[in-house]
Image 1 (spheres, rainbow, N blue to C red):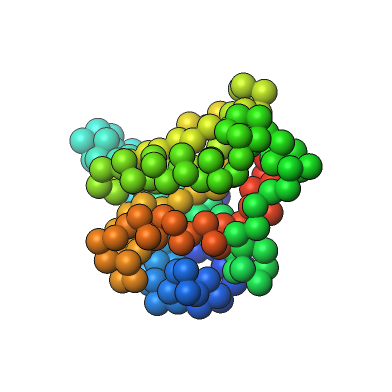
Image 2: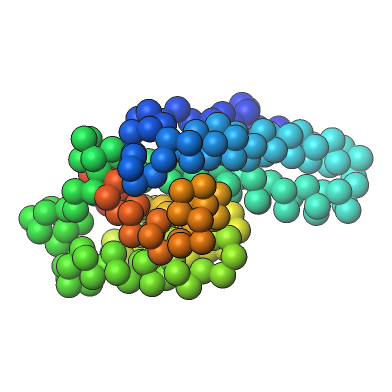
Amino acid sequence: MPLTEKIALPKLDWAYNALEPHISGQINEIHHSKHHQTYVNSFNAAIDQLEAAEKKNDLQSIVEIQQNIKFHGGGHLNHTNFWKSLAPVSAGGGKVPGTESPLGKQIACQYGSTSELIDLINVKLAAIQGAGWAFLVKNREAGGALDIVTTSNQDVPPAKYTVLLAIDAWEHAYYLQYQNVKMDYFKAIWNVMNWKGAEHRFSE
Ligand code: MN3
């Protein structure tokens, strides 16, 4: 069955250069208008190809196309979560949840403090081999407990999780600015982390 509508590149809530100096405008522009757009286009093309292959009962193609759907569809979902996870400092980016907020309380309960949670996520980001993602998630099957999940390539977190924050650990997310020093990128990104959005998603 075809989808009822094509997926589209989401508009950003901020200008490409609004996260500077932590993430350069050049990175955001290429990342959004080229990389993410390619995931969108390739997913839409693969959905059409799947329909054609299904009509021909072409099993070999069906299997191959589904791998493309997983990769490009995952790329679209992960990047959509990534853009929502970022905010300019002027719009509250980097401002961690207060201890009185539900998310702040849950962080304190499980990790001690937001800075300890950030350190832990950075350790997991550093341990990703090759391309991948780290996510702060809420486990809806475990009473809303927080968890840190990493995935490879464009794999998405299991559906029982609500993504609160998504961090892109692919080289294309930092290389133009940070080159091989990816830890500097992982440290800098917390200055523009949209915790307000995370609090909203946590409370949904
Ligand atoms: Mn990316």
